[in-house]
Structures are given as structure tokens and as C-alpha cells.
Image (cartoon, rainbow, N blue to C red; front, side, top):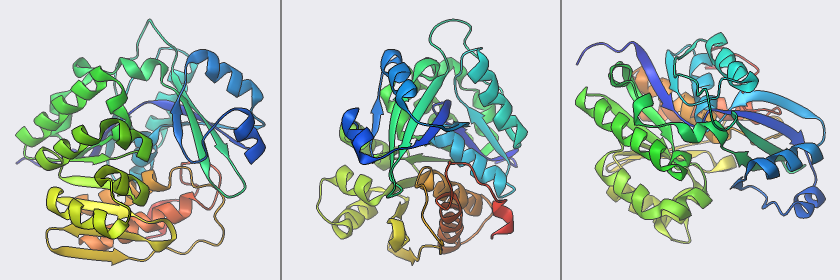
Length: 325
């Protein structure tokens, strides 16, 4: 196997995040389920955007956030995702390149606008996401540069990509290319609603193709349709090669075969916004993994990144994560 030009290649939905504070009454008025991610159409996106209070707009998307975290640790990252050749598409590409992540996917010249995720953050720090996928649903197998895939130690994807059939084909092409080059592949389950939509496919993927699985407590219990984390953990152990499972304030648990590493959560003075916590945990873990760290240390780095991100509004680090290691 040749040396890798990149530590992590991320493949995801290229989305611009719009983040604003809201209360439970706002969620009720707009029939939003707290803590969930709901797919919406362009008309609904326009209406919700108009109703939201003042907020911030930043290039995001689950996998994009992870790649920003990898870069903040000092890692070498690349990204594949689809935007439109519009203003938001230009902003998305500029943001990634500005933080040192390689992004060369050709922008669409026709079709839907660049995707956006409208995130309502309630006082309990829960985030409720309404996502208009727009141009990112145009991601397909032709966008996968197999040479780029082969040049990364780990190819990491978000489970949300399963919502678009062509994107799913793109992921499977990338996974095959990665394994052909002797590289690793990784997936995050994204959220429990996503798991519910693709449970059987995800379990088959974990058994047959995935080297590193990420998920939180609600996602993994949903995946295996059990009522406790402990039951889910043992079922995961039978199917996953490596699994890194987060439990909010309880920290995370990493398993590999008979190994179990329970790592406490990093301290945070105040939880302000949980947006991106899982994304940044994956960033820290993958940075550690691609730099030869033991699994428990990978989890510790993931916890540090998650703690930084939940201490402020927004899903991109405000402090250089490499300074927090």
C-alpha cells in the first residue's frame, strides 16, 4: 500500500447551515420534532427560513463539519459533495478550502439550488434540523474520483446519503475503491430516523464493508431494535469491526472484537448547542486513528472535539483543536 496523501476523505451532503435560537412553542407551531432531522422541500425551506429569528449561516453538513474538525486538529482532509454554481455553492467551497480541506467536486450548472439545513436550537441545547437537500442530491458515481479515494487512509461517509439513490451508489463505488487500494472505510449512522429508514441496509453494510462505525446511543439501539445500550453494544460487537459509540455526558464506548474502551466525556463549562457534537467526535477519533493512536486515545480526542463544539453555537470549532489535545 502506498503512502496516503490524505488522512480522511469525507463524502457527504454539501449543505449550508442556518442556525438560530428558538423555543418549544416555535417547534410546536411549525410541527418540528425536537432533536430530529426532517427532510423538507424548497417551499417549506423558504417558509421556515422566513419564520426563524436572527442566526448565523455557515457551510456545514454532517460530513463537512467532520472534515473541518480533522483540519482543526492539523489533519489532511479532502471532501466530495455536490453544490450548485450559485452564491451558496461558492461560499461552501470557499469555506472548506480556506480551512485547508481539498474540495474539487464539479458544481452543478442546472437544477436545484445549493442545499441548506435550518437548525433551531432550544434552551435545552437540543438542535432540531429541517433540511432542504437541493443540489446535493445530484451527487452520483461520476463524482467519485477513485484515485482520490485511494489516496486517503480512511473514507468517511454520512448515513444521510442513503436518502438519495445515486448518492448511495456513489458511496458503494467509493467503498470498493478504498478497499481495492488497501484503505479503510467508515460511516456514521447520522440519526435514529435515518436508521429507521435503512436499518437492514445499514446492518448489511456494517457486516460486509464498514471498518469503523460511528453512532450515538439512540441510533445504535434503533439499529438493533433493543431497549438498552448494553444490549445494542453486544449486538454491535458481533457485526462491526470497530465501533465508536457516543453517550452524551456519559462519554463514549469503543469496541473492537473482545476489546472494550469506555472513555469519560471531556469537561465542558456549559452546554450551549449540541449541533455537530457527533460530527466533531468523529473528527477527533479519525484524526487519532489515522495518526496511529490507540483506540482509547482516539475516543479521548473525539470527546475533546465534541466538548469544544457544544460550548458555543455552531458546528465548526472556534478554537484550534490541535491546541486542546
